[in-house]
Image (cartoon, rainbow, N blue to C red; front, side, top):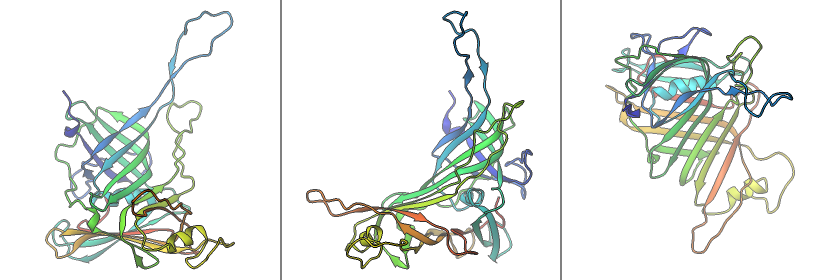
Length: 344
């Protein structure tokens, strides 16, 4: 019987629309294959059944297959090589700077800074997906990242998910025999440090979400596939759970400032949020750990409720909305340091 654990998924940046780029191509053109907790891509297609007609009978006379699109979500433990490709696809632009060394996955450590695009479209990905070892293998062309999510509890692993949309699926492709796996270390909650306006808090958990709100349902006459995938409003939100020592964050979220004693009018207070994740292990043959630093220059705490129950300690669940900073400043930037010379 086909076993899910025998499957594999690989990603690679696709430079040309409608032209599949093989994630399993030989080095140095290879993509990145990532281990998954669960998930798969699927064809979204329905039967088109006509409405009842006067003069007909009580049975459905016929049906035809409707238009097709492809989407799916993968859940994973984030590793610092593969999530670079996914984040670059989710935001749009990447600049890589070699800090030291020249040999990939050996003596090199490289910082890839990822920033969002505005006027330009998001990058395409090509995706290879093998379900089990022999059930089916697919190649997906024209893939975009719709959602990207990271989260961790204080006493758990860093986990993530990515939601993808594609215009084209090809079944029966040749599966990559020896994938270039991302085997960099897993991360846990004790490796995550978050600051709000430069202040550290003892958080119980955190999450961050990027949504591109892709338009994935536009079909045109004469075709059964998507006419394209368009980005709409980008939304970046965070969440954190903490046991506060005082009510300053609640006052800021609900009243408007930390010192207000009642609701005030005007714009909400905006503060910078930074998330730093650092591995215990170093990058291959270097003395440098894997790191990811997420910077959000301006964010607003959403109003939240205080809750008390019995002998429970007060704990706040806070949502944070990233907002556009001043002209020329990105709403978000992510710097990932790993052993890859370029983003796949």
